[in-house]
Amino acid sequence: MTIFEWIRNREIRGKVTFSVEELKQAFSEKSYETIQSELTRFAKKGYISSVYRGFYVVVPVQYQLKGIVPPVYYIDWLMRYVGKPYYLSLLSAAAMHGASHQAVMITQVTTVAPRIKYSSKNPDLNWNYRKQIPEELLMIKNTEAGVVRYSNPELTAVDLVQFADHVGGYQRASTVLAELVEAMDMGKMAAVVPYTTIATLQRLGYLLEYVLEEQEMADALFLILKEHGQWKSISLRNDRPKKEMARPNRWHVNGNVEIEIDDL
Image (cartoon, helix red, strand yellow):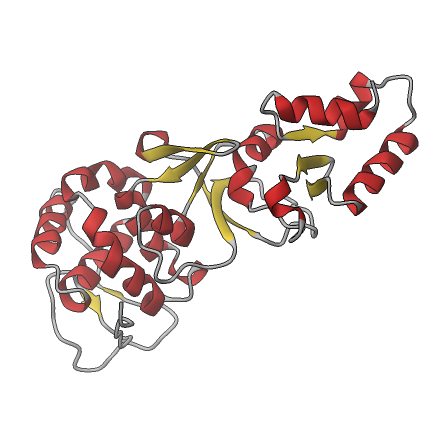
């Protein structure tokens, strides 16, 4: 069996990725240089693509002209390879829930530290990090190459606020939230509390009430927060001066950023 036949046989069996280490084990009689030379040749022809150090994806026919495989196609296999839990997050997760007005070209993935030293050949992945992955708050969807894990609507909403800088700020986060609220169930929000900060929930409550005008959702979140004692007074953005004469509110959030959501 040739290396090319080995790769194609894996693809037929539904294994659309492989590592150099697996090839070395399958072709122990070949040198590393020979294997690497073959892989380079196949990559130039568009049959495979290097998406991580020593990790390749077989390029489906429908992507061979573009030469770029969407990360959703292989992300679950890649994270198994690096041995880390993960989930699609932020704008990528919001798009999975139908909030695609602000979709981006990159795929946003949350995992745990230490940081992944990803390949410069794979610029379509944007990494975010948590101390712990909340497995019970994740959803799974079947894809053409396996499965993909992504945050549920409630965790997605919290992430958009907690990591607003990763999506372009509160203006963009609020525009996405305006669509995402249709998928959110505030009865499930209490389960998110252990995985975020009180300050994040204060800011989310402020945005729900005063920017999105989702009063019922804001009231539900307020009841959840009341169970967590006293809150500190905070600013919507810590890197901006506090707004003088800002409107007092039950969230104790100084609205020091003017937000107008985009037309949907």
